[in-house]
Length: 231
Image (cartoon, rainbow, N blue to C red):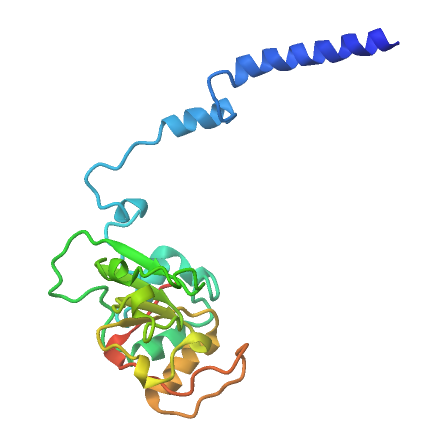
């Protein structure tokens, strides 16, 4: 009986080896042959900018504009989904909030640097005592998240901020943190986020219902600094 089991085991090992040689012999990562053929068809980007080449549109506009946000939503298909992936049931909130903003440009109109080096600085505390502030400031575009502080931590995280992404529960409310050269970007997860921005821009009383924590009750940024990210 034992000899019979040994024979079956050895036969299985042999068949496995044969299949391995036939199907995966040329693939050290064990990717199926069909997938290997598919990967071999991928062509490198030629002269397009690296990020633009990932998109199927000739121009990329990450921020919504009051004049054409509905057209853009239809083009991208975001009019078919609700927040945070689209604006199907929140289009009116988008319209009202965008009507109070002064710009939707990505960079200043006089900016003539075609290719920029970017760095994203998070809030995890991993930069503490790393003294990378000068290195971070050497990048053309510095993106920061939420209310990650700069003031008092310049040696670790740098001084400059090009873009700062936020939502109502994570935005600075102390004017000491406002850098007039920073563009702040609202990332809307729910209709309440747009209503909150609209109420602040209009000077109305803030409705704090519907938030997972109390949102900021004052806006330290000027309308020209604010953008709304396209879902």
